[in-house]
Every structure is written in structure tokens, then in C-alpha cells.
Length: 87
Image (cartoon, rainbow, N blue to C red):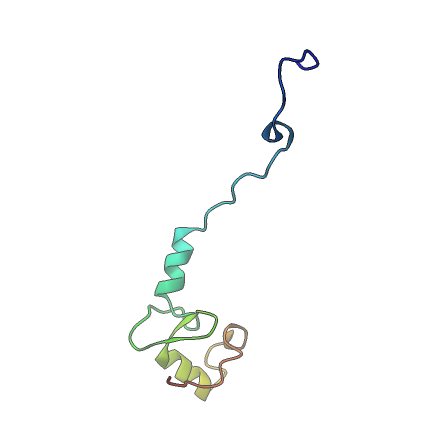
């Protein structure tokens, strides 16, 4: 086992690498694309998309913009949303 001249170790024999990272949970991905990020209700047309890629029901965003206290954690979820702009 070594020092006999019979084997030359490769890099993969000497360096241990990290294992593969766990894949994302498919349930979380389905939830992200099927539920409104603000109201946590099923997405229904019309749907609004923010610059970060979160999906919202348009009704939920309009309610939030009219009354910020409608959703308790709305300030954390979409604090940068100032209005609904088409285009």
C-alpha cells in the first residue's frame, strides 16, 4: 500500500470533494408558481409579476396598495411595490 512504486495516485484519490447539493424540493417550487406571494391564495387571472419574479393576484396587490394593513406581512413581502404599471 504505497511506497512500493506500483501505484501513482490521481488528484481524485488525494482530494476529497463535497457531495452534490440537495435538489430543491419540488413542492416548494410548485407552491411558488401556483400561489400568490402576498395572499397565499391560488393564482387566478389577472396575475402580476414583480421584478424579482414573484407572482401575485392583481386583486391582492390592489387591496394592499389601497390599505397597507390588509396583509400583515405585506411590508416584508412586497415593500418595493409602489403601484401597478402596464408595459
